[in-house]
Length: 236
Picture 1 (cartoon, rainbow, N blue to C red):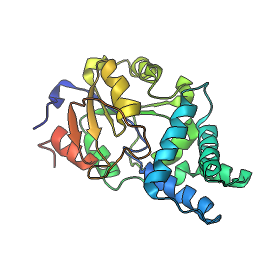
Picture 2 (cartoon, rainbow, N blue to C red):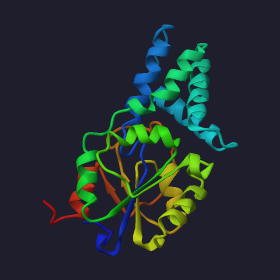
Picture 3 (cartoon, one colour):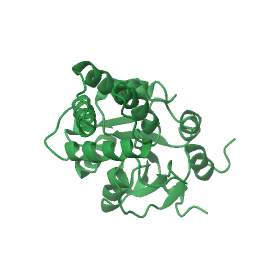
C-alpha cells in the first residue's frame, strides 16, 4: 500500500535519465564500441561504476555544459583503461544522449498521469539534449528545469529551488519521482518533498551509473506503470 495520499498533490516532477530514459543502456551502447576497438572489454557494472564516479566528480565542480561533462567523463573512463579516445569519439559520446532509449513503460505511464497531474522535469542536462529525449516520452511537460538553466547539477538543491520558483507550486503539493537516490532523493528529502523511488535496478547489485547513497523515499515502485497504477487506481 502506498504511503503517499496522491489526492493531496497536484504536481509530479521527474528526473529524466535513469528514470524515464534508460541511460545505463545508452551509456553502455555508446561507450563499449570505443573501448572494444582497443580490445578493452570491461564488465558492464565496472563501466557504469566508473561513469558514476567521474560524472559526479565533474558535476560537483564549476558548472560545465552537460556535453562537456559527458566528453570529459568518457575521456577519463577510457584513460583509466589506457585508451586515448579521439576527439571524434568524445564528441559522438557527448551527443549520444538523444539516442538513449526510453524505458518502454515511460510514455504510456506519463500519458496516464498527465490526465490527473501537472508534470515537470528536473534534469541534469542541456536544454537541447533534453528536447531530443523528450520526443521519446510522448508528453508535453508543463515545466522543464535543466542543469543548463540552474547552472548546477543535482544533488545541488539549487536545481530544486529553481523548479519551485518555475512552477510556483508549494512544495507540499509536489511529489518528486526519480531513480537516483544520490542525485534526487537525498536533496529532495532535505527540502521536504514527498518522493517516489523508481527502482530500475531492482534485483541487480550495485548502484550502476549513480553513486550509492542512503535515502528514505515515501514509495518504491519497479517501473512507471506501477506508479500510474498506484497514483491512479481507478484510471483505465
